[in-house]
Image (tube, rainbow, N blue to C red):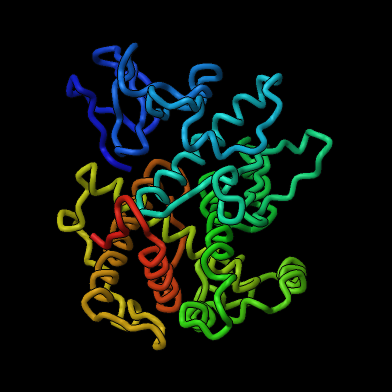
Length: 358
């Protein structure tokens, strides 16, 4: 996350809606990527979900006839707001969703809504298990469905323990499901022999392996004993689609983690730890894709910076009596999958800030 500043010079954060120094109303403008002042007659106005429900601090042009920001306009279903608990949990969901969209838009990805692009658009259904509708979290045809109860820390941690996961977060859910959306949008329609699709199969395996059978086997038997040698999480070992989703999720986590550290002045060169050195093949693309050695080296340097910084973050977290913030191991096969995820991100970027390795 960037470091934001108010017009008065005070530090602002991504979730800020008021400056604590000058008491001015502020909000995030997704078009400029900046925090801006909001005032009567100004160029920007607050999202209606911020005005009415205090769950959003994003802005939209004052001249727009729309009342919802780009993030809130992607909601197809929201929970019953007659419940105070639902409003609290929904606010947490919206916070995580905005961080996902901040990253995807910042990487130059075009994210239309279903209203503007029925085939490629993206919408969210945030549904409570306490309703009469069964909730299965996942993605289908541009619709990402999330269980509102996952915003309850106790509920989520019980699920994490029952599933044997190292980490389970709201933002992680959004990142994971965004990978399924992007796969369907950009890769599923390619010819079987397309190089982009062959590269996917080279790194992740045959995506047409029976998905239901693979998940059934995973939940019955668990991941292979040596899964950490080839996958970022145990769940990634269940099927190539889930391997991709877990890898993409971690790619976004690294982008955000590095940006936050470096924007706040935490630089690798000032850390008293040796830089983790991965072998050169860790940063190479599959053979069927043209590979630029300089770009491969930049990616590898980027990834190694994260491995060093994440070690520091883990040690700080453990020193505070908490679990490690990044309890994952990046093996050579995992690094190669992250390299392909980075390649895809660059290929799919059409506007805004392009994906970078620095």
